[in-house]
Figure 1 (cartoon, rainbow, N blue to C red):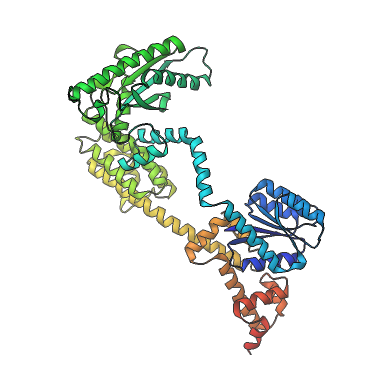
Figure 2: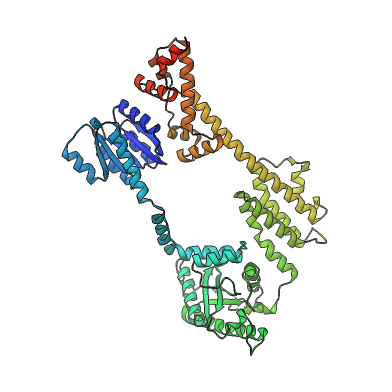
Amino acid sequence: MYRLLIVDDEPIIVEGLSELFTQSDDPLEVYQAFDGLEALAIARKLRIDILLTDIEMPEMNGIELQKEVQRLWPRCKSIFLTGYNEFDYIQSSIRGGAIDYVLKTEGDDSIVASVKKAIRIIAEEVTYEGLIESARSSLKLALPALRKEYLTGLLEGEASSSAARRERFAQFEVPLDPDLPVVMAVARIDRWREDAMGGDKVLFAYSINNIFEEFVALEFDLTHFRGNHERLIWLLQPKPESGYRQAIVGHSPLRTGADAEAALHAYLLGMLESVQDACSSYLKLACSFVVSSEPFEWDALLSKYERLSQLFGRGLGLGSQMLLSDDRAKESGDEKARSKVKRIRMLDQYLMQKERAKFEQLFDEIAAAVGEPATLAAGLPLEVFYELSAIFIPHLNRFEALGAARGHPIPGKLFSIHEHRSWKEASDFFRELAELLFERMEGGNEQETSEVVEQIHQYVEEQIDGDLSLNRLAEHVYLTPFYLSRLYKQKTGHNISDYITRRRIEIAKRMLGERSLKIHEIGMRIGYDSASYFTRFFKKTTSLTPQEYRDSLK
C-alpha cells in the first residue's frame, strides 16, 4: 500500500482526483490538502510515497513543498500538476527530484499514468533482493552486538535446540562448533585502578580479552562477551589440530577420556595464571578467574555459569586474584534444580508476549525441578513460589483479575505459601492463573478490536458529511492509518472505504426517497460538495444516476 498526497488550491481538482484514485485498483491510500502548509502538516505525521501537487499555490508553492517533503521522506516520488507549460518550472521540478510533470489540460489518463509510473519506480527500488542485500550489509556491522545478545540469551537459559544453534552460530559467525562440548572461563575485576575513569573500564575489559586471546588463541577457538556484574566470559573449544581436541570429541588411543580432560584442565589453569599475572603487571588490575573443570554440553551453559559464579563468593580465604575451578565442588541435586529455575523470569516475558506454549513448557520444567519437597516453608519451593507471585501480580492487575477466579480467593493463595498443602497444589494454582490470564488476553484483544470498529462506525455516522479519510479515522482511534486499515479488514472482512461507501449510498437512497431535498443538497449531506461528483459516485455504485433512482421509486 502506497500513500498518495494530492495538493491543489482548487478543491474541485483535489476532490475529483481523490475520487479517481480512491476508486482505482492501484494499492493507494489517498490524502488531500488544499495548500502547501496543510500538505506539509500531513507529511510531518505520515510517510508520503507519492506527492501529486500543483506548483502555483499561495504561501508555499509546489516546488517549495516538494523540497520539504523530500527532506522528510527521501524516497517520496513527486509529480507536478500545473496549468503552466513553462521550461523554468519543468527544469526546477526535475532538479528537485520530480519524476513527472503533467499539464492539467492533458486529462485524467496522463495523471493516472504518472502515478502508475511512480508506483512502478518505488516497487523497483524496494525489491526483495535489494532489501536482503541491504540487510546483509547492516548485519555485518551489527554482528558483534547480535552475537553477544544471542550468547547472553543462552547464558540466561533461553531454550535452544541443536538445529537452532547450528543456524544461529552460522548466522552470527560464532567461531565454535554447536555440536561439540565447550569449556567456560569467567573473570572478575576485583579492584579497579584508582585513576580509572568511567569510560576506561570498557577499554580495560577489552584489554583483558586481548591478553586472554594472546595466551590461548593458538590452541583454542573462542568467543568472548560480558555477563552481568561486569563479568567477562569466554567460551572455548580446542582447535581441530590441538592436542587437547580429544577432550571434547572422544578418547585418544593413548589416553582415557579422564586423562584428556585432566590435561586440558591443567593447561587452562596454567594459561589463566599467566593471564592473571599479565593483567596485574601490564594493566595494574587485580583479576580473579574461574574455569570449568571439564567440557560440558551447550544445554548446561546456564547451570555451569551459575556454578562458576558462586565460586567468586567462596574464594578459599582470598578475596582477590583467585584462580579456581569447579572441580572442588560438584553440583548437588538442589543446585541442579536451582539452575533450572533460574529461567523463571522468562515466564514474565512469555506472558507479556502471549506465548502460551512456551510459557507452559517452561512452567512445567520449573515445577518439576522443585519436585515434591517435604516442606514449603523453606528452600527452593519458597523461593519459586514468591518469584511466581511477583511475576503474576502485575499481569493480574492489568486484567483486573485480582479478585476471585473459578472459585479460588486469589489474594490469599497468591500472597501466602501457607495457603497450599503441597507444592503440587501450589503449582496447580499457578497453572490455573496462567490459563485465566491467557483467556483474558485473547478475550481482551477481541473486545478491544470490536470497540475500535464500533468507534469507527459511530464516527462515520456522526461525520458522514465531513472528513472521513483514513488518516482522520486513524487519529480518532489513536492508531496509525495502515494498522487501522489492517485491523478493520481482519475484524470485518472488508475495507473501511467499502463501509463508508455503503453507508453513504444507504443514506442517499433514503433521502432520495423522501423527496424533500434537492439532489445536490443530498450530495452535500453525505460529503460531496460537487453535484457532478455525487452523481458520478452514485451511478458507479448503483448503475443509476440519483435522478434515475428517484424516478424508479415512483
